[in-house]
Image 1: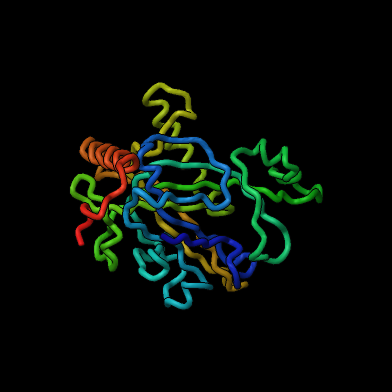
Image 2: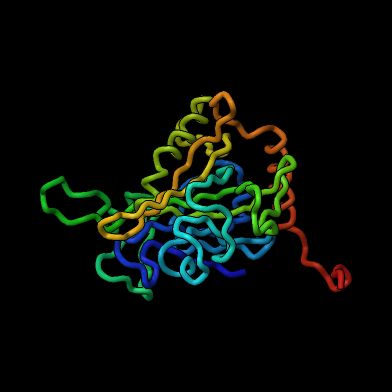
Length: 286
């Protein structure tokens, strides 16, 4: 199983071109099903077993695979080849979990051999000597060199007229979903931070628990990208927007009991497979 990395400092990208997403699936998180804490990871390892067939979820932009594959900027894609939806077209999803972190953003030209530092909390980043806050406006102080980001663990619902149906390998209440992990950093994180906080607080208030114990998987949401080109510079900015899925009465659609039951069954089967003994030659089908 391979991992892919697409970051705002991707090779050949020009400063200010776009904000992009790094995405990959995480089957270990399926067994949690609850909101969790932050993690301090550079490139989080994904367990090899047990596994669900994985896809890489990425946003196409003006350099890299978007150009080589002829995919328009802002499209959400699997495996850097298969366009799932164009910019402006929503994907329905369940946010299984959100894990926040702080990541170093070094100044100067992109260096592919340099590995930025990452921290679980802002306090840890500050203790390590990084600047996490902007200097007062007009002060001329140094820019911050460490910014927040998050990992979104998702179940993405298969849209209509999808060109790559095999990736949607999980059946929940009769609908097919693809498990995926999406990294949101810098401006991309800023565009979704508020709605993630609202989703968590809404669940916490409904259950009468502290805000930090709220979950994100209580409502269906839509993910949609917007690609906007600056007519003066020609550069394209890509943003990700997350909003609750609304019904015909403009009310947020809660994740139904059947979908929850199927998720719980999936989590149990993965947990069981994780402790199952390895197959012998007699167990192999061929």
